[in-house]
Structures are given as C-alpha cells and as structure tokens.
Image 1: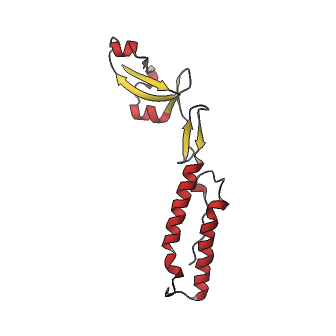
Image 2: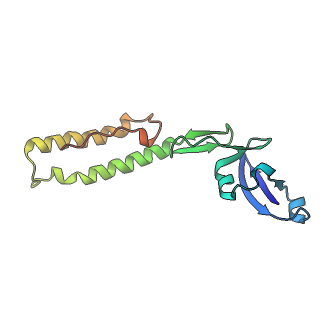
Length: 145
C-alpha cells in the first residue's frame, strides 16, 4: 500500500508499507486513494497537490517561471526569475556584439551606428519589460543584418 504526507498542500513523502507498520499508524501517514495508486511517485509529487480534502491534479504550468502557490493553489509568476533570465540573456547578446564597436571592426560607420542603436536598445530592455508574463513572451530588439 502507498502512503503520503502533505505539508502546506505539497505532497512531500511517499512510502510503500503494510498497514500494520507502526511508523505508518503513528506517523500521520495517509493512504493514497485507489484511483491514484498506480501513478509514479515523482508524477504525483510534481503534478498533484492536496487541497485540504483530497489529492487534485494541478493545472498545466503556464510558464517556466511559474511556481505553485500553496495558499491560493494556483500558479504564480516569479518576476525575479524572469528578470534574472532577461538580464542574463541581455548580457550574452551585449557580449556577443562587443566586437562591432571596436575601432578595427570590419564594418562601415553606418553599420557600426546600427549596432550602437541595437546595443542601446538591449541596455534599455529590462526597464521597458517589467511586466512580461514570461521570458518566452519577450520580444527582443532585432539584431542588425
């Protein structure tokens, strides 16, 4: 038989024991409902939650930057994670385009100016995208051709 413990709505620990195991009887373990007993433990922990009365499947995660909020039993956006990913990607794009601003870059003055505008748009990007619903929804400045 499969048992679980929950903490703040999160299914945390799973054990398979016989019903007469003293740890199960005295330890606050709950028997997993029959309709869920064949689901793998990892899937149950990641995809289900305890809503106070029963184990319920979570809705699909709307974005990579979403975390499960146990007080509302819903997905919430982690803005700090979006901002961190945004700044890391921007840093990469700026480093990738550094060569365009060197004195001996094989570019015309016109092309260097295009790259300068692009790089400034990258620098301004975090401040202009504070309410993005996810990292994937960001529309980045277009790199000059």
